[in-house]
Image (tube, protein in one colour):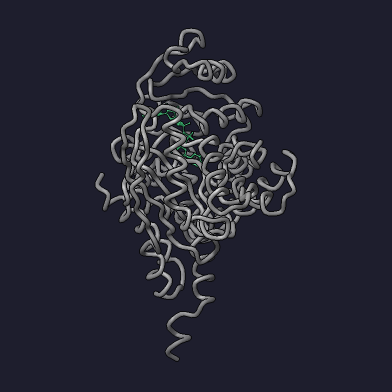
Length: 421
Ligand code: NAD
């Protein structure tokens, strides 16, 4: 896929949502382009004494509803268009959940697995040095994303605090607990998705015990499996980058998580789990109630969507179903719970972290879970109602819900009719 189609595709969602709302053209004009994208070259000293430079970006897509918020990814294929598209998604994700944020995103074009730990620390600190005037607790608040983690967030928070001369944990979220991170952040993405499915289970006509297939057994996928198994649901198939495994009467999720933690792949664990190894395409076609893509973008597309057997798809990954894939699923009556709603538990608990940092008072885990549940049920229920009332998909309804909030904020600044009439 070219960079252009990535951003264009995202903008198609905006246009579709706009067609369901009476909003001023000024709103679309504002949301069609990123407000600010800063590109820098980070120059760091490598362990062998040489210097190496890496391209880096930070995009603040729209800040009408509050400071921009979004992760920083370290990836060799990162591009400016990808960063801007992800920042666009964040704008809508924060609006769907009614978090007082706009959308942002950052990236460094690097393969972090080729760096030593000290090189990784120097790169993380260099990112903060380069973007210290872009970010800030009231301006733009980064978080972890692909190949970045809590330790990296801790280094970045420390670097920022040194630059401004004041301890400023609220500049970044996803920090280690010892440095002002929030309880409940590690499983928040999966938990948000889980609360959503549980809340809508009757409307989605899911059986009391449902069969789940998880594509991508990483952070989000493993925590989802754990929560589902704890409530008595069956995880009947799962995959990671090594391949896929299946067991019709349910996989032992605790053994899978322990095996992954010990560095084993799912395929390597198959025999111990009494599971059969299947192809990645067979995973998507597995008989189940709920399919949870939790790996990468564009995994369910025109070529394989027809084989989906699930009643419901929960997008824990960002953008796992392509627009063409969406059409096929819709024609089959499969309900897709869209990424900007389904995986927004992560940014919601990031918001809690920022609030706790600013107030200097920290909540216990029960409080975090209760607050997350309230927001997921409120916004998930609202999106369901919009979808039912208008006869539109949950994805379009989520965009409509978010766009109505964004439009309200943009219009509150005054639009064309105010200035010309
Ligand atoms: P992760 O790196 O921990 O896990 C990704 C998993 O996908 C790994 O197990 C990997 O082996 C697997 N994978 C890679 N290629 C695959 C393939 N072709 N087929 C099957 N599996 C494959 O990442 P994560 O943090 O769990 O994120 C997963 C997705 O969820 C991403 O799209 C991410 O943007 C999204 N997401 C994560 C969070 C979060 O808080 N972790 C928040 C919002 C969205």
